[in-house]
Image (cartoon, rainbow, N blue to C red; front, side):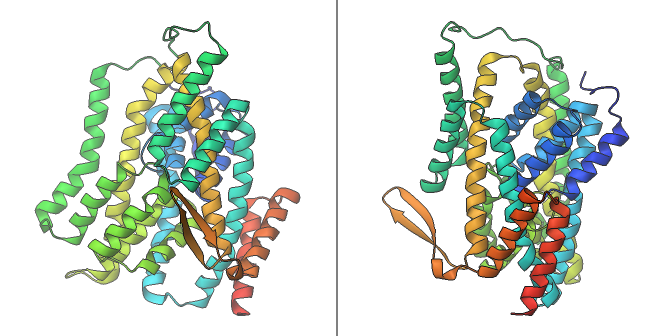
Length: 437
């Protein structure tokens, strides 16, 4: 059975998933930290080992890992219904926020209040990310070998640009190798022990796959039949469906691919607008991959056909969000029963421990990328043979964003003020500093 402890009611869990969604700032690092605090630390609904086991699996999937982790944990507590509630609630605040900001951006992009809010929130989100990285490090890097794997993952992705899937495969192999060396008497794989979830019949898995493939792709096919293959809604549905299955490593990993296609091929928006969209996603609740919703809005807003531009933009947002997140439910509901069944399988656990350690290194890379582009106005790429480093121009440091970031760090780590109050204070400081020039 996938049900959790009897004292965890679906309504109580739903309230917590809504709370997770409203506090999910800071990209995967901040979001994973929020999920862990609310579900593991404060309520004990999921054990530490189960949480890390689920996290490792979700990090191997394409798409937003934090949203998939929430879906997985909701499924773990209350089955498919719980997973649907948890995963959907995680998306809703970000969708509403990005949609509202997209309309403001398209119609009133130079509004001073909106610019000031972004100016204050971005460095505060950096503090949220740092706090979450520290929390994740304490939980995941409990062995010297895990620390080594995390460090190698960070160096390979930050300095060499190694693709995320290769890092995951290498980390999984390293985890198995370390386990075998530390326990040489386990030459043969341990027998598969069923966890708390029985192995699902293959017919049930086939039905799950067929159901979610239908939910995912039928709307795209219907749009193509109704509007023709060249319509912007159809083009966006096909393009972001492809992106949904190759976005390993989260929004940062797919940003270059989406930006190149959206800007250069489809001409949905300009290069600087892509960065503005990422700023929206970074400073609103929800997964960073929600930036694709902004791309969908602007593309349809610029190519509305016979529709009002704002109406077209809203439809573009819905289409883009649909084909981006429906595959996440497919991956979780199809794979989670097998992952739970094999939870006590020693080689799999060793591989997932290696992946968990690599996740920490990758998240640190995301935090470093975010810090560089938040605190400095000018960040260049330096190449030395195979090494490619992002190097900031020190003179471009913005002392105002640095001051807000340090203040937010002191508030969260020193005074334990909490994320919401910290973000509100930072937003107010941003508006004030923006008005002062």
